Image (cartoon, rainbow, N blue to C red; front, side, top):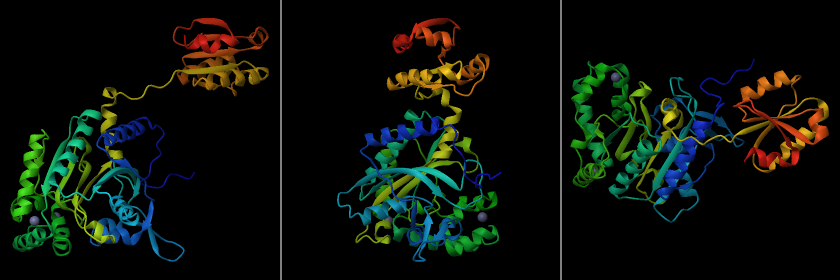
Length: 415
Ligand SMILES: [Zn+2]
Ligand SMILES: [Zn+2]
């Protein structure tokens, strides 16, 4: 038997998945985001440049392959860089460019609860907007989506402010000096990160390390006057729009490209990897990917698998699309198969959901099957019905049977 690839999954019931996508498309359209799609294959170089060589994603989690010219291409590990590339490649002039996209992403990491090697995200980006009020508007859009559209009730919003590039350069020195004094108190991974990508030490899961980082200097305490002002405006206006949040100084997000605002929506129901949506502002990515000038931007990715875990628990509260009633035609022998197809075709032409049983031997086994299928009516055609141009209609709820003229069937069923 050939099994599915490790870290992938088959979706055999897409009701919740499609509900989430439909609601997302509807909600984000209200905020004037347009949907785009970019390729799953990209040049490996794109992610090396945008994510940074020292990130886990680039150093060990990418699925890369060589294309014809022996240039390395890869399955996209995320889609923000692709959106920025699309912005630059297509010469988009009108900013802010507000877009959303969704689809599969690929990372070769250890599979765990709610985390897959092929996973799916809904992604939103605003490219070319400086205003900190844009961040507030963006967070309000997401908060409203989670709370009101998806009716999630057990989640929180974590935010932090990483300042500008200059602020971070100064801060990294302060943090380095602090960690030098703590060298014996932190784990081996943190010691390596201190040298390679120092702000990622905060992602360490070790309680001992976290204890040390509680006392560490905070980036939001070493901001330049402009960043200080924006950080204040951000918090004031989140409160103004009644968005609850908790300031989390250790939230730095895994990727190199973030500036200023970073955030995560988290749920305690998801275990250790508790974020289901994360993002922030990035102000230098456009130039990194080949644009002429930097464009202040922000974006977020929503983890579809993780949201589905949350929705699964509350699906009774959701208004999922109603299934159409099902009608099943039961030809009692092969002689009635052509008639059964004709009757089904008439109903299907009227957009009535109809199936035909063509492989069952006896009426008994057919009725058992119709029951399992959850049909509203069984439509029985045997030799008698065929002769009389009628159909025996059985109501599967009440068990009541009635013989109806074939030409009146559709009308009878929807009466
Ligand atoms: Zn600054
Ligand atoms: Zn550590």
